[in-house]
Length: 171
Image 1: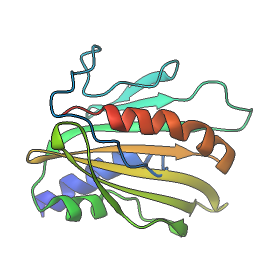
Image 2 (image 1 turned 90 degrees about the vertical axis):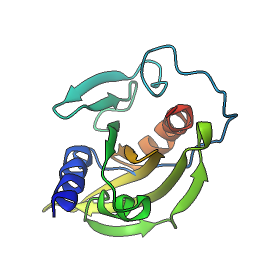
Image 3 (image 1 turned 90 degrees about the horizontal axis):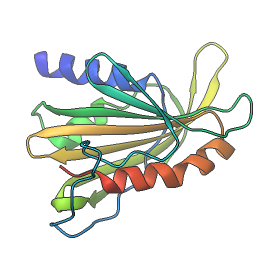
């Protein structure tokens, strides 16, 4: 029960933004760590903020009025229970309008990744959000990157920066 509670707590913290994730590009095992002291290279020009529990948010610049696009990054947490189980648990329950298949991949230093893209409807007004969930297995810990955009145009504009960030993750 503690495991499920920890997974759900991590998901609730991250899902505050709500979008889908793309698969990372694999690199050689000796790829250098990002120079910023983080485990990834954040998108240039995006505004950074944080939340209790180590979650870091990056908000996209230059969108049209009313558009939003955010990347949430959860720190690796040792949770056990299996990577696939964890990945299913961290996806916010919402009304799914469209969904891609889960894509398994390999990131830097051989880290296993899982990715799924969803369009969901949330809340009383059935607000439609575009999301990418990108899970990274880091030894016995799992980390989540979550892209959330307010509409398809913002999603398409932000996806390349998200993909580059996910591909730069260095366990």
